[in-house]
Image (cartoon, rainbow, N blue to C red; front, side, top):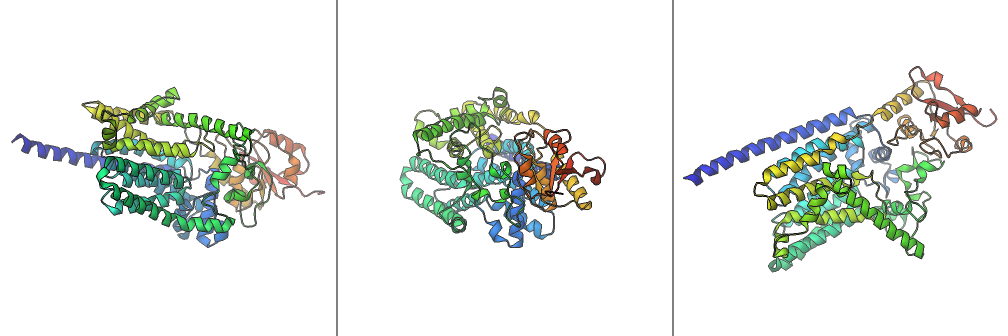
Length: 543
C-alpha cells in the first residue's frame, strides 16, 4: 500500500520539476533576448570580421568569404537574416542568440546523458539562464556556439545507450564536425576526447570490445566527413594542407622575446586592405607574422616549455574562475575541488570510476585546457573556456551525490556559488558602439566619408572606435601604430597611409599631436554639437 502511495507522490514531484524546468527555459530565452536588444549596438573587433565574412557569403563573394582564421559557422548563421534585409549588426546579435540557445540546451542534454537527475538538470538550467545572457551580449564570437556543440557531442558520447545505438555515434561525430566549423579548436579536442571517452567504454565494458571500436569508427568517420570539405577548401586556398590558420598565428605572436602576446599586424601597422575589404582582420592569414618553431634552437625549445608552464597556471586558474570561491581566492575554488575529487573513487577504483559517467567530464576539461597550452592563454580569455562551466557544475553535483546522503541542498548551494561571479561582473560598456554609430551618421550626413586610420581606443575594454566608424561607413580602415595610451606612433605614417580621416579623443596625446601638425585639419565643427570625439581630415601633401 505504501509503495502505491509513493509512486503518485514521485510522479507529482517529477511533474513539478518538469514545470520548473520549462519555466527556466522561458526565463533563459527572455533574458537572452533582452540582453541582445539592450546591447544591440555593442561591438567588438572580432565582430567586424565575422559580420564582414557573413556579408561576403550572402552576396556570393566566396574569394573573400573563405578564410582559415575565422570558422564559417557563426557567419553562416547570420546569412539568412542578411537575406531578409536586416542590418549586419542585428544579424550578428541574432546569431549570438542562437548560440546562447545551443549552449543552454547542449549543457542540459549533457546533464541527462551523464546520468544525473532531473533536479540536477533544473539546477544547471537556473545557473545558465542567469549566466548566458551576459556572455552572449559581451561579444559576437563563436565561443558560446562551439561550447554548446561540444556539449551536445559529449552528451552523445557518454549516453548510456552509446554502445548499442549507432545514431549516438553518428550524432556525436556530426556534432563534432559542426563544432569544428564553428571554431577550429574543436577538431583536435574532438578527436582526442572521442578516443579517450571510447577507451572509458572499452575499460568499463570489456565484453563489448568490438562495439566500442565500431562506434568510435563511425563517430570519427562522420566527424571527418563533415569537416573534410572545409579542410579541402582551405587547403586549395592556401596551397598547402590546412584545417585552420588561427593556431599558427596564435603560436607566432608568443615567440621568444614576447613576455606578452605581440600585437597583431592588422592593428599595429599601417597598411591598405585589399580592395573590397574594410580591414585585413577579415583574413589575417597572410599578414607578416614572425613564425617560429620550438625545434629551431635550444632557446626556442626552452621558451616553449616556459610558455606551456605559464599557460598551465592560467588554465588552472580558469578551473576556479567560474565560481564565487574561486573568483575570491583566484587560484582555488569549488570547480578546482570538484575536478580534483572527480579523479578519485571508492575501491575498486576503476570499476566505480567508470560507473559514474559524470566523472568522465574531467576528460574534455583536460582536452580543452590542454589544446591552448602551446600557444597563449591570458586571464581575460575566459570565453575560450565557456564549456568549463557546465562541466565543472556537473562534477560538483555528481560529487555531492556520492558524498552526502541529502545531496540536493548541497547541489543548490553549489549552484549559488557558481552564480556569485555575476554579482562581481563589471557592467558591459555599450558606449563605444553607440558613439561609433552616431559619429558615422554625422560624417555621412556631412559628406566626410573616406578611409580612416587609427584605432582611437575608447575604453579599458580596448574598443577600436576608428575601426567601428570605418565599418559603419563601409570604408577601409588602414591600421594603427599608436598604443591604447596614444603613444609610440608616427604621424608621418598616418599622413602616408592613404586614409582621409583620423579620429581622436579630446585632450588625448594623439589629439595634441594632430592639433600641432598642419597636415591634420580639425573638421569636428562640421559634425554638429555634442560630439564625443574629434575628427581630423588628413590633407594631401603640399595643400
